[in-house]
Length: 394
Ligand code: PMP
Image (tube, rainbow, N blue to C red; front, side, top):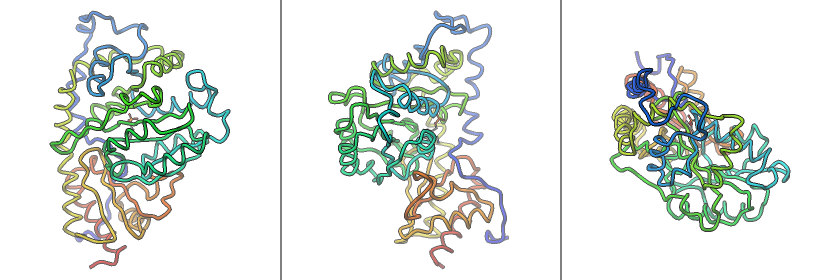
């Protein structure tokens, strides 16, 4: 049966790890047992301890190149901590300053296309979103600087600085420095979501400039977020925030009532399993072996079927979880609808923009990791048909 005739039920909407990836971390579950949990100097079973256990902080401080005092380990998902920091800034204020909500109409800079959950957090708290164009090396900083300098209601900015969701952008040193040092109101904060800090798809372990070391002008500007959702288990992993010592103290103090102590047994399991930065990178290389062929398959199918075309391009990311399709003269929505009718779900057109509105209807996000290679072949064939149909190609 030709692909045009087929009706399928395939979902490449979200960047979920597949079963083979989840299997990689199964041995971790055997590492802390009733007969070994007391082998350590510290008893991790009780109430004592806020903000994470030292052996796990050691691993993240090595990866992020900060001190242990600059790390907070909290819940199991980084979005929880991001949501929480926004809520606390809105209602409690940041280190002694008045709550954001008392400063009028709070606004955030939202580089777009971007991560829809960042935008949903803003919507939840009634924060106005200002989209700013994303380039391959980060947001357009001329625009960002101009906006932020002239409007004290702009209190925050979302950034996914490495292998950005969904464009795969890698922030340049210059962009990082301009974000760290630009003029803004004193309680302006950068939400530096380093979700893909070790999620390389090539031999090159791309690193970006360490914004937490660029603090001479604004020492408390940046909250950096990370998690093991796509290293070990989403929801069963560990998440954290790195920042200035002052911000971490603020975060611990304001979190005490919510989370006196996290799941330290799970943190210990992660520390034993991942061991150190090298251990994390070796583990991520196993993920790459599973998922890289999936990215390649989509790229090959698009190249063979669509080839070079002025009206559509896509990226071949060096890391992260997404492929980004860009239609020069629009048409993303109808490609999405065509796929949906065939039973292939991709991330709805528009969802990578604030309020779900892509003003030029240009972008579509593909998430290749969850489906098997066989399923992806069918999915890509449907996608190619949709594009051929939309662009009137033969
Ligand atoms: N940030 C970005 C940029 C993401 O792409 C994702 C996952 N899609 C997350 C955060 C989610 O992180 P967590 O599971 O730790 O909440």
